[in-house]
Amino acid sequence: LQSRRTREAGMAAGLLKKAFPRLCSPSLGAVVPGLSGIQGRLYNSAAAQVQPSADSADAGSDKIFSEPLKHPDFFRLSELFSLKDLFDARVHLGHKRGCRHRLMEPYIFGCRLEQDIIDLDQTMQHLQQALNFTAHVAYRGGVILFVSRSRQFSHLIESTARDCGEYAHTRYWQGGLLTNAPVQYGAGVRLPDLIVFLSTPNNIFQQHVAVRDAAKMNVPTVGIVDSNCNPSLITYPVPGNDDSAAAQELYCKLFKMTITRAKDKRKQMELLYGLSRPEDQRSVPSRLSQD
Image (tube, rainbow, N blue to C red; front, side, top):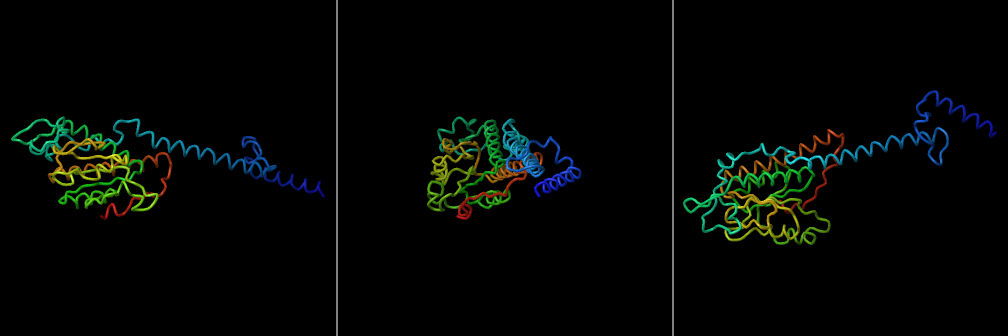
């Protein structure tokens, strides 16, 4: 009986070898331990085919994140604006000389009719760095929060954040939104990866509370700082006018284009390396955009 089973197994293996000659080729490797004959080689071939695909996926993922860091302007943000655009939007106009903050003196070009003039050459450099950092955060799927207390620009800022798929907070800032977030929203809440201040003052004489709270929680910040503002707690300060409508519209347009361009670039890189991005599971407290 045993010899009969052996002959039947040999005949079955021969038929499989004739039907699928590649399955029984020596290039498929050794037999998987615990299995014998063609069955072991079938499992071994499946493992051999899965392993390279996983390695290639990891290599492609590494290239997606490492490639932007090799170029100083990977997203080509320098072509979005020029010095003339800043001048036409009146970004160079500061406050009266008597309202000047002492830490803003390095960014002041001069004074005309008792009004501070901001150096636009420095504004271009700082704005380029701020946009570049914002693009990298958006490229990696980070949460970006726009913050401002200027009531006349609340609708503009909220529309900008909604159009680029991010968040905005233009109302009264309740204490502890960042420093006491686990108690207010529960354990495991995710803080923003970047906060963009389109206006850093809370009122004429006081700085926005979120600037201090973000510095406490090590949340990077980008901020438009006028001549009467304190830039010391802003990670990427951008000296410029934060009061005129033309300047605010320019800032919103630049940040919107930067974030949109970074997200589109991420999709192109994933298609280039044949990867599918997992579903976006970013979680940020909904009250941040509703308060």
